[in-house]
Image 1 (cartoon, helix red, strand yellow):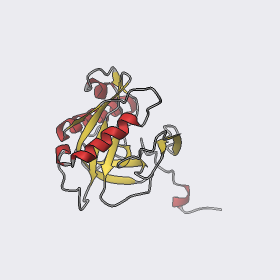
Image 2: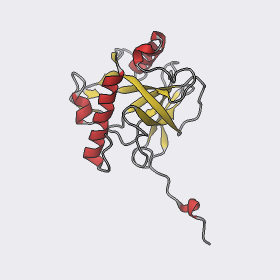
Image 3: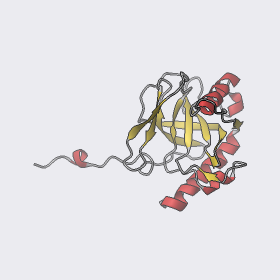
Length: 205
């Protein structure tokens, strides 16, 4: 029996088989792993490209935005060099949080996102930046151009979530420092270069 071509096409790997977006580092494509409704942390399996359960969240804190990564990026030596105290990047694709006015409860989707800033995060001696973006064309957040244009409470929610989402009893929350759009563009460019150095393929600049 023969099947039409769509039946035997391979699904692209979300990290390696999808582009980083229409105009990186300003406008990127984000692959969403977690929604604001999730109390379980999902994470891409780096080998097969499917989502797997990483861990249930210990606390009642929920993600304040869509959360995922920018395809064809890598937090390697260049990303690590941008964070004081880091010896390297964490070896994962670059994380991104995407704000949307309308609730989006589907994961394993792609969204176009306008980058507005980010948060530094030092996990041990590894840089683990969190890029902050708004859904491109969003009727409420789409006109936001930089992190300082957001209501401070939204930035505080992001900082609180990421400072505590790995917290175990007796541990100290991880400090995070917000940064502006220009720094976020620098981090994304470094992550694109880190990916190209390790995995090859076209270098997007």
